[in-house]
Image 1: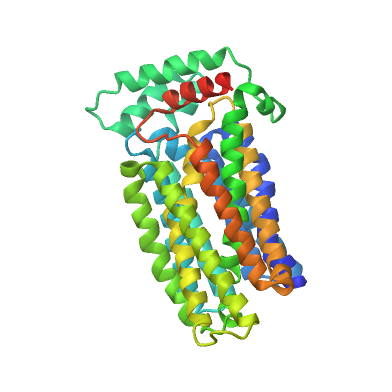
Image 2: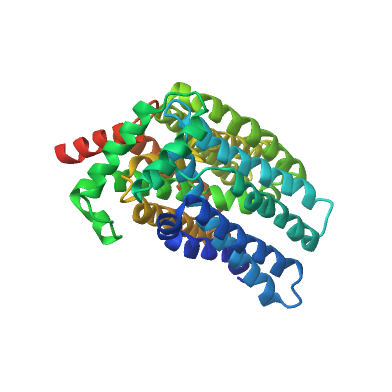
Length: 404
């Protein structure tokens, strides 16, 4: 019980960070929000590293979670707002690739260092990012939104290069900002108007399906799954990392070539198959059948799930979330979508142990069914946003909502 609570404290902190993320990013800008999130992370890692009693470590995890909740909203939004339309998907997915590399590196370092040293090392990237914020421009779209037109133009020129022609992009941003001035700043309740229904269904739906597909249960308790299935946990974990990084990299390359929808469909089909294989492994184990095959089946299933998730479902919901909401709604909508994601993560990471005790095979068959629902959801509702400006995406989303 305490293991489940401690494991899920991080996600509780992330939910708190998610609730305030949109407002902070709207009031003090994208760079300011990133700086605050890193301060939370640094304080959290230091509290863990120097903890003398358990509650200090728990407070540290809560603070790191708050920082992560803030970052998980503001980084995709910032990247989507600064990148050209033909590179936006790839750049946003590079963020997921970096997370994937960071997690893998931590697994590796953690094999040789104790947890206090690991917590101290956790402060290093946070300090580097705070220093790096002095060298990057603010989001031109946010600057336009708050009426800083000259700074918006300077930031855009800085991002595109000294000799680049920014006139068309500048005029698109200006026209869209003029339209927004006629709209009031939205609250969470305003999100539930009919004109935003389609964006909200897509954004929230993808996050719910991403989390309830079981990714955090599998990631947090991979060792336990391998041991339960009768396979070596160390070999299994190394194999997971070996699959995860190249598949995330492949997703980055394909993002702006094949588009979001085809990658999501392939990814969710793979996660459905992966969970089906793991569930089958546990079912055969319970029936005392094919005992030599069941550990291999579990490993193949976990690797298929991990590789498929890394290809699309890991990063693309965050890419789409950063693209589909109008800028006056991004604060409220982003907070809500990020909160839903972390709430789902908390529920799955907290409940996973209990589900496995209840019925291991049934747990994975349930995750497989949710991935099956994801395939239908993507096929029917998720729009293709590849190669379109944020302003063009808004126009098409509004037209779809009006038709409904």
